[in-house]
Image (cartoon, rainbow, N blue to C red; front, side):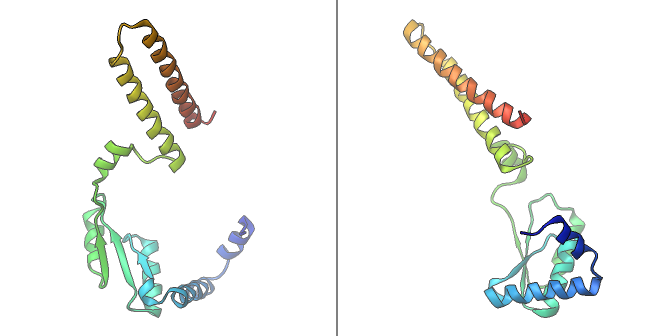
Length: 163
């Protein structure tokens, strides 16, 4: 397990040593998976551009993959297209569709999942209320079900609020 101290030590190393360590890690990956089994996730940003450069200095045929979500600036898209051997992939769902289906990405998958289930529970609660019949016995059962669902919503809200 690496510690904050390990990180501080590596950050303090001279640039040429950092480059050599990175090249060593790249060679390890290619030795493990082969050139065909390795690709660089390439966003067009400074970090992935430097990584792609370092990888291709050692292995010029390594493929890069750019995920065009539709949110990238046109300048970034043009920059990415200026490189050879880059696969450009496009998600099946546009970002606005992801948000309307699953909600806005938040702090963590756990939080996003809690919101997703809270919304499902809330919509079930609304459906239960719409289907109510005047039958008193059924109304009592439905009220119990709604209370259980509301308890789940409250738990999800508490989780989201960190309480």
